Structure formats: C-alpha cells, structure tokens
Image (tube, rainbow, N blue to C red; front, side, top):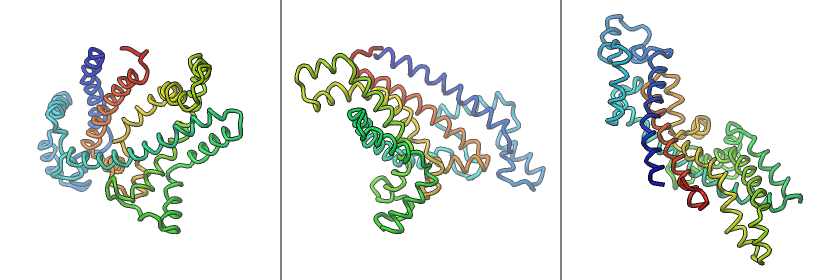
Length: 308
C-alpha cells in the first residue's frame, strides 16, 4: 500500500506540469490582451508597450512558462490582471473555502438521503415503493438549480419565512440550508440509481443467501454484508464529487449571492483574468488527483479483498 501511494504521489508533479502547460498556453495565446484588461482599449501605445514589458509579456513563451512554473513551485501564482495589487491566492483561497463548505453540506445531504433511498428501492423491488422512489427522485433531480433555486426561495423564504434570504454567513448559518438543498437535488438521482443497482447485485450474491440461511436478521445482513459492499461503486462517484468540492457552482452561487469560487471563475473568464483562471485550474487538478488517491485507499478498508 505504501509503495502504491508513493508512486501515485510521484506522478502528481508530472500531471500538474502537463496541466500547467496546457492552461498557460491557452492563457497566453487565448483571446484577450492582459494589458488591455488593465489599461482599457483606448490606452496610449507607449503605455501599453511599457506595461507589457513590466509584466514580462514581451519575453519568449518558454521563458514566461519557466518563470510561471518556478513561481507555482514557490506558491506564487502571480497577480490578478483585473484586481490590481491582489495576488491570485489572495483571491481564490477564501472563495474556495466558501465553496467547499457549501458543497460539503450538499454532498452530505446527497449521501444521507440518496444511499438509504437506493437501498430501500432495491429492498422493495417489484413493489410499488421501488418505482415510486426512483421516479420521484428522477423527476425532482431533473429540475436544474436555475428553477429549484428561485422556487425554494419563494416557498421557504418569501411565503413560509422559515429561513433568511440569500447570502452567506458561514457553515453554521441558516442561510446555507436552501443553497445546499438546491445544489444537492441534481445529484440525488444518480446516487439513488447507482446504490439501487449495486444493492440488487450484492443481494444476489452467495454470501448474502448464506447469511440469511444462518438466521441472521435483515438489519444485521444489511449493515455487515450488503451496505458495505454495495457502497463501493458509490464511493467512486463520491471521489469525483469530493474533488469538485472547491470547484463551486456558478449558477447556484450567483442565484443565492454566495461569494464562492464558481462565481469568481465566471467573472474571471469574462474579464480575461488568466492568472486567476490558471490558479483555479491548477489547484482544482491537484485536488482531483489527491481525492481519487484517497478513494483508492478507502477501497481497501471497505473491501479487504482489494490490495495494491
């Protein structure tokens, strides 16, 4: 196991260099001039040339890329083109923490609700409850945040007045409830269907029939034999979800007025703020690789048959 983890970690710098190169090339040769972002389209040609030299944009691509990689290794992702005087990390780290809190609550809701519903649907296969659960969840999850967000605000904030209006007050603020539920809804159908299919497959295994033959109660069988093995495919999907915790949701954060990383990424793309875009991409890629490594290690605890 240790050798496997070390090998995976050694591949991380290689993957990050590839991601940095692609992102840096797109930022360098993509549309939009960083100098015009700062000075505007009607700036003086002399001022444009002087600022381009100060920013180092007149140097060869290889030199710029080497300097950028060196800065990333030191933890310096450069300065924002749009927000002058502010570094990239200064902008994105607080926003990523906000998005991580919001998406963590949403992911928790998906797991707590989706896994029991998926197992219940499998348990009641052939009865009315099975299609009722699947159909209801699929219908609700088919509604995008663009629809469910304003609908939840109308019902629970304006009409019922159960929670405060949109905004952000942290993880333990009641204003996180509606955004988290709206973001969690689209992922419920996937978890329920995967958990249902996986549970049905596990229920047909010989060791489950043997457990019933021994006289074990359904509750014990569900906890010890079914849930643990049926959860493995769901764990793979959760790995991608965990990797996307800091990614934010553009529509959800915009609707509810949450200062997350998704909203910042959306603004940076339109403002041609390439250092911020590259910083978000690089940190997101590193998080994705590490999250999937954690999931691979978690497999060995859930299923002792898995060895690396």
